[in-house]
Image (cartoon, rainbow, N blue to C red):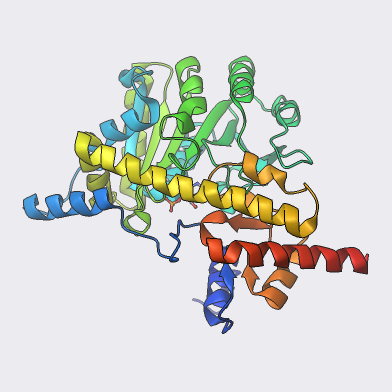
Length: 399
Ligand SMILES: Cc1ncc(COP(=O)(O)O)c(C=O)c1O
């Protein structure tokens, strides 16, 4: 059976993690994998999560199966977190899914069922899994322009490309903290995208994986909420991995905004049936933790306060790295770092430079030049900036 099975190419980020682990250098710096790290390099369990887990453990009397759509209280809590009360709940269909990735998979399968001819539009650059999942599901893919030469969103180019989207096409947008670039559309661009979706009839698919890591829990979903208040149909995937630090618990929500309540009933049934076909019941523990936190004002305030400290640490690293790079390169070329939001930015380095950074300086970043700013500490920012400057000098001399 397996004689002709080809081994898949190793995931570049997982490969990078292994290379980092094997690197014996003591001063190596890991800016690769996309998880939050504190100054000691740990990915902590948030205090509100630990408190919620203790409560759940004390009270839980069964681990029997729950509904195919997940716990309805989780669906309501996540709806509030994402959309506030700006949308008629009767127009929403939602299910719990295994992580944001699971939610994306379920929603793209829903698209394949409902509109098999739809094209999925993704940004260039993009998080590789959007393309991989769309491809696995059998949907056509196209890219739209996203970044301008100075590292910010080029709204005009983005809109010009999306003007070519057909009615019923699906346009994937990152709710905030765009992965990998770190550049987010401004409010005017979100408004223009909403107008265009209305005019052209394409369906925005907003992927919210970093709520609270950009500007704030509410501010980070302002673009999403603007769209949801105006458009008849949308798809929304959310992840509890980063915002609640629940990476391995696999917390995700797949939600569809429908033109009317009748459609929402059918879409909810289709999503629950997709859960059934793919893995039956979605994971419950992490979803229960999120529900407990969001439903208790004290735990919620504690979670928001801790999330604010994570956000502030990454923002401080941004400012410090931009200053260190300005000093080391004697140029303002990296000033865009301070305009970006969330854990990631792309430094705009050639793949050769990325390789050289790893081999000669022990600085690990993803081949597309993405860095995770949470991987830096005050002690390593100077060395990372010096390494980037050295690699750029070498490249300039060789040219
Ligand atoms: C853009 C984006 N969407 C979704 C996810 C989903 O993450 P998870 O499946 O771990 O919840 C990630 C995680 O890296 C991401 O970067």
